[in-house]
Image 1: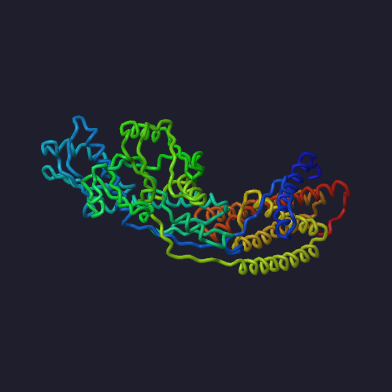
Image 2: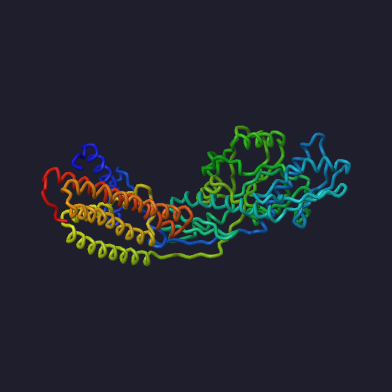
Length: 533
């Protein structure tokens, strides 16, 4: 017990001091003082319930997910039939009535077509059901999406949408947003500290689906004005239809390049005209495809389409190699920067519509913090008085450990960039009670061993050893419960769990190790013959 090596003392004090110092930037910010900019500034973030902020509920269009799936299958069928050996000729592909259907030019190749298409209809998840039903009737082939396949597609689309939303919000510089799925086609977004959600809504409202498609030069202006598109093409409006009275542009539906192969997008200015532009870079596969597209169609116009609208339709003057290109249009510096952010974070697989919007004011948070601090101070003060009166010197050690425990919790939260929520304050108060409980167990066990006739040093040694086992067992189960809440919970539950997990670790550290060091140093120095505990 008395043998407490110097290295262990230094280690314990170093950990304690590091955690306590990490709280200083937060203390400075709370008191209005300026923290030196040259020093690291770990901060504790306040959650939506304490700092206020914006709450948005986004909803995806289920019908759009279905149409997206049909379009992907249409292109896959076209590619698979062209790559078949020998090639299988087909007529125009229809996606009418939620099905992909087409006619074979040669009905005798029905079996070969079925074999090629079977590989496109895989199992949907773990259900064992197929994601597409394939029907062959002579030369007519029909692919119908199954409910299991549609559900899997919706899950994948919403999962991708959550990640895109997260990347876009992170680009705003906000910290610790809450982004969770709700139901099958909704996403809840909560951003603490953001009082004006307009910029957030604008950022999330743009799908940022970028496409490069060849223009059908044979389509006449009269046909386009009347909304007539030739088979295999589609009419796409201009982003600014009022400019020069432009009519929709006819582009080929298949064979283009999508923006999901972008690796970088940055806002810049044209060196000649000084107009805002967006410079983009493709990955190797996209760069190769883009070079092939431009090499084979020199002199032909191609459309740059963003969210279903043409923003530019230049002619291909020469092959564009190197996997880099630029997007120009009627951009302002702000819109060019917003587009670059959206393209860099990826396109939303489906449009998201804001169906609920709330702005939470910080006043409620201030009141909650004020009352939470009062409750914590009153409760902690009463406990400290009781502990000091009950256990004397050992009670004073426990009280000092309790104060250090509070500083360490705040310090660890600052170092990990954690967010403090109203339930987190409840976890804070609960942790203080648990920390005191550990010291009560130790001190009561020491008192019990002393009453049994053990000598001072032996009673303290046995008291710490035996009580520590109970403390560790209790805190392990405590930790498991908190970890499960953190893993499976979200929002307030997760905030509570994070503080609780940190508090479990710091309370064991302060109540067991720090107090043991202080008691050991005191016993070695004073050599008391009796304990007043």
